Amino acid sequence: MRDVLSSPWINIVAAVVGGMALGYGLGTLPGGIGVPGVVWTLFGLILLWWTLSDRRKARRGTSESEADGSHTIE
Image (tube, rainbow, N blue to C red; front, top):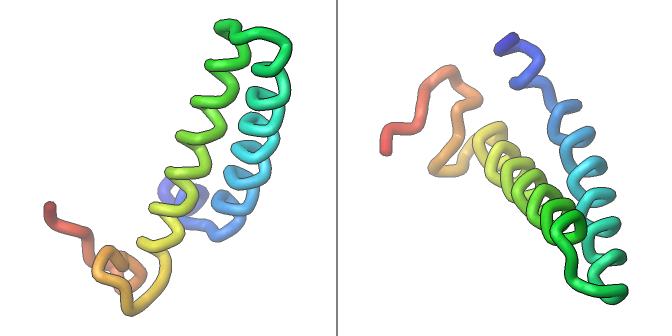
């Protein structure tokens, strides 16, 4: 399972799904603020945030990088 989550493709898929969820959620909000629109918007934002933070961990040279096998200690 760890190999799947460390693949760079998971970031691409998550970014596309997050962008679609965010777009759908924001697109439904002008018709009236409802629970489904807010949920889709939040889901998209959370998924995009995770994608960006995970991408920083995959890049060498950043303070959060785990590309060399180490783990971030917080």
